[in-house]
Length: 158
Image (cartoon, rainbow, N blue to C red; front, side, top):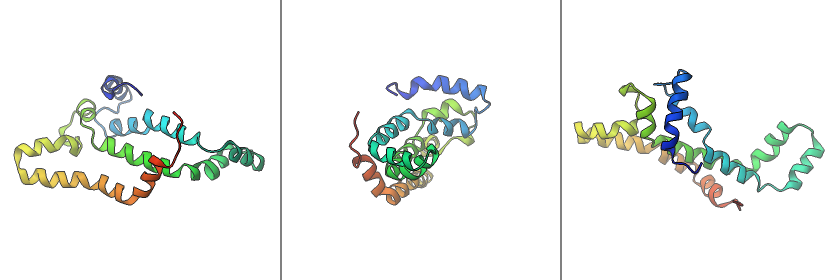
């Protein structure tokens, strides 16, 4: 988690080639699902749940799945939403990964194509920049309360 993402590009390339994911959208999306920062932060958020709450749930049911779904997930909902928005924004803005993990230029995400559009026409680049900016903005506007609670609401112990 402390290493820069450039260090993980070669292993991502090798894995995507061996799993036949090279030059597909899955090569870009799958590493984002298993992001170490998300695992670390979600672990810290779950540690803020009082032990007595989980112990009381254990007395009611033996099912770990029910405890996770009915007790833990509602408690950490804002943290999960915050992590989803942060991960989406980070992967929406990535430039280096598509250049390494994709070969077909037409499959490149908009974050990589905008500089190319700038050289062709200013109007096209402006439209692309506005379109590129809309999804993160909508996510922020729709989930701004959850983001604020997810970032500040937990007393995390690092």
